[in-house]
Length: 515
Image 1: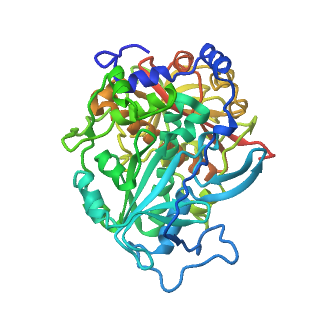
Image 2 (image 1 turned 30 degrees about the vertical axis):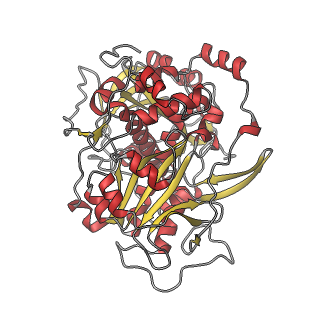
Image 3 (image 1 turned 120 degrees about the vertical axis):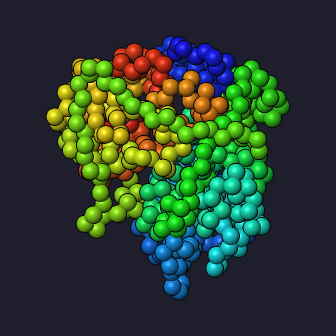
């Protein structure tokens, strides 16, 4: 990657360079490290002793016989009760299915996760509800319960930690999403941090989607004083760090709880960031560089506010523009986002068949609302469509411009075989009819938000990716997200500017008949 001045030594950019895949590097690592050691894998969830509150299962698509249900009347719209909280947490990242594998029981979740590692931990802070005392609780997926981790009213402290964000101050509850790095790095080594951020974006995407059905808006708050939240949760950011807060506010009041500017962290030279980790991480290089980037991106009380972004326009410069105006995917006729989430599974293989242009464009319109108030830094994320077999769209690479909903042609050609190669020969690319590629100008992002930019961009990519997943499934198509690809060759082959860092890919197609 070129054009890294003046932040060529920032930990964010250094980390991204160090975690790029190449064919040579993958072969070298396979010889050096071998396959992951199953004995070193840790459970993809936390278990707490002490006070537990069982959540009701009324209204869950997978309610099991004999489990407790909510009693009494429900809270009115915009007010929280245990039944609503139960549905929100389950649909965000609850256990939707269990499958026996060679190594043990696989617990599948509502949100997708790279390799089934599930690095995201879900906490919820409440002022106090009928049947639930004020405090912070960890969501226990095995028995759909809450375990108390902070036994005091947390909301005033969280409001201060979020620089006085009005949504946090008015929230009925705040969902706190963290990443436990080793769950992903066990398999993906240094690149595991990328996966943890994307997976947390998936969970946030689910939460934002389902909150409206319960009368709430989930306001994503990505600027907060990390050390305050870490102490409240009792975690060490070197191994588990808070990534985003989601304030649950009455949907009718959301507009008055104005968005506030993001804040920027310092830009830390990579060698200084590694030195600052010191003895906090007694592990190999993978865990150390992850910890270094997470710690470098933390915000202090004096963190500088970032001014509003200038509107970004895509200048076609003579390239062909394809009108992509289309209404967003809708859920009607008895279908809901909740039922889509409950039944969601990543498509593992496709059949050779064109995807309808109208369905794809509706899904894109849903994934990229304009404006995009729920995203952390919407001005940074860029999206490219690789059309292989889309009705009415010539094969090639396009920029997707969400504001006027149009496709701007970059390069025509058949990229089907290239996608398979660039995607590490994974079966999801073998017969995919299209792919969405999310990218960012990382130098510009670091200049704007400091090292914290790496979190913001990947959270947004995962969030948009999950919105796209759900919309495509609603349209009857197959979809699978992917965080493993040959980074630099992706830019060169697909004519994506060299200055852009690819952060996520979504494969799209018609599901194979045996799905």
